[in-house]
Image (cartoon, rainbow, N blue to C red; front, side, top):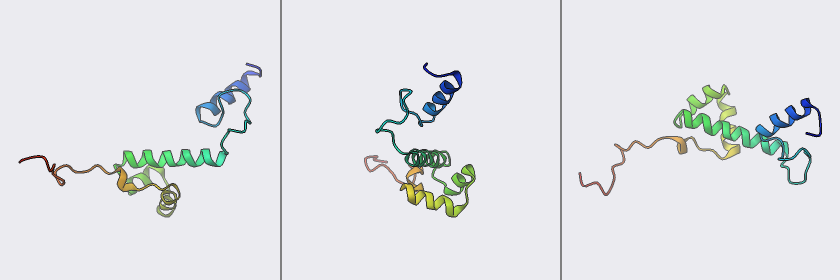
Length: 100
């Protein structure tokens, strides 16, 4: 590694968080802006919370510890729909091919 141990540690942590490119030269033209990386990370956390809460927005808000308005603003910003994370109840929507 060309730098000291502290630089290596900072690079490794940034890489794991998706904030560093593959090599030690960190300011290449292909690197996305920090705001895009933060937005993608935030959207991922929201999707994970909705998945855990089975599409229940109140449960996801509690898990993320964000106010209702903020949560819905973020859903709109990222184009996320809680209904997409709800499990369909198979008893309510029978299989059309099932003869019973």
